[in-house]
Image (cartoon, rainbow, N blue to C red; front, side, top):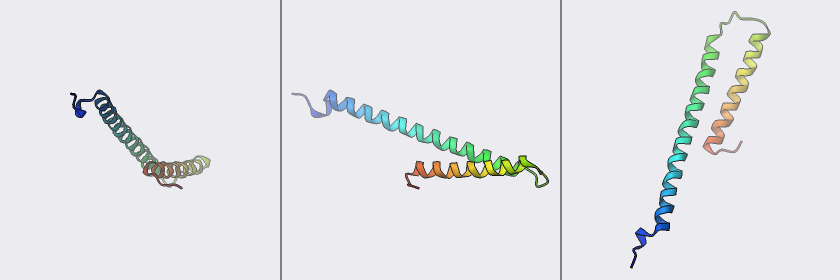
Length: 84
């Protein structure tokens, strides 16, 4: 008589479930690291510019910064499962 706990199908299923949980945790951690990297890049761009800069480059940089902030906001909403 075989015990239910040692059923090969159950062992395989439990192993796969643990593997999926580990991979999901690693992917989530990588995603959060990527978001933190982008956040630090935005802060570096925002604080790295002096107020005396002029011309189309400064205006373009402000638009790009606003676009990146909006993208990060959307990505964080997606990561948290919130519908926009």
